[in-house]
Image 1 (cartoon, rainbow, N blue to C red):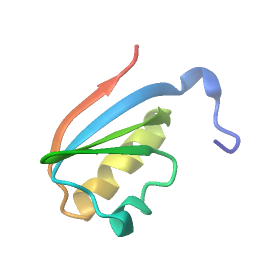
Image 2: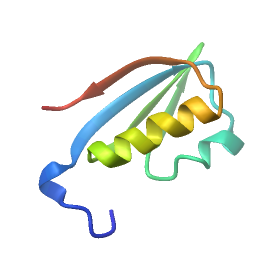
Image 3: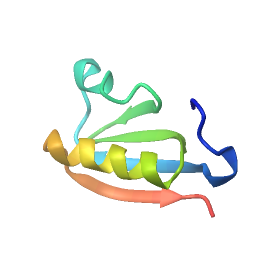
Length: 72
């Protein structure tokens, strides 16, 4: 993370419906992807602004969000 306040960053887990292709996976370089049957689990560290951007990107790509978990 470049210049982001690390104190505000939290571990996050985002689950989307479907298996994300490698091509779409490149849209989320800051996250690790775990592909499972019928869904993709994304793990990474993000602050609230970055998380908003990630969720906007998911929406813009037409991906169905199943859940978002953020470590408190």
